[in-house]
Length: 139
Image 1 (spheres, one colour):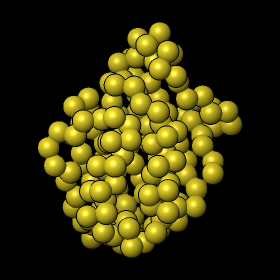
Image 2 (spheres, one colour; image 1 turned 90 degrees about the horizontal axis):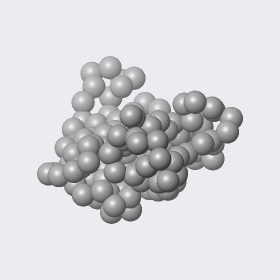
Image 3 (tube, one colour; image 1 turned 90 degrees about the vertical axis):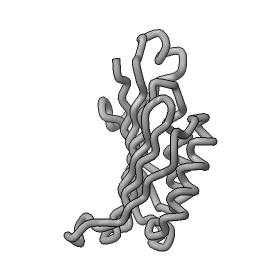
Image 4 (cartoon, one colour; image 1 turned 60 degrees about the horizontal axis):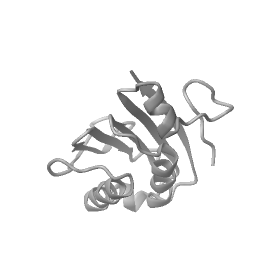
């Protein structure tokens, strides 16, 4: 597994809750790119919905409304499911690329959560081989 950050790809520096509060951050953003996902899982709308429910429970985010999961893409390069879930503190979104069996997940919240925990869960859920994690604070 390889985790990298926007600011320093060699030395992951995921902010702690204390740093988040000390810096007066408005929000925490992370993107998780998962390679070599199980093709059956990323092509299953209900499995994607269940992922969102379990992820929100894990990182203690309250879902607002139902998860939107739509399959589209005329170009084979981008074809696959996309997902959006509003949460009370912002949103979770993702795209699942059929051609490459990759998952691209974005989590943004003004409530602190653990990006590494979210990334590990995402990797395990979609049965990928590795991932790249990018983290940024919004002020």
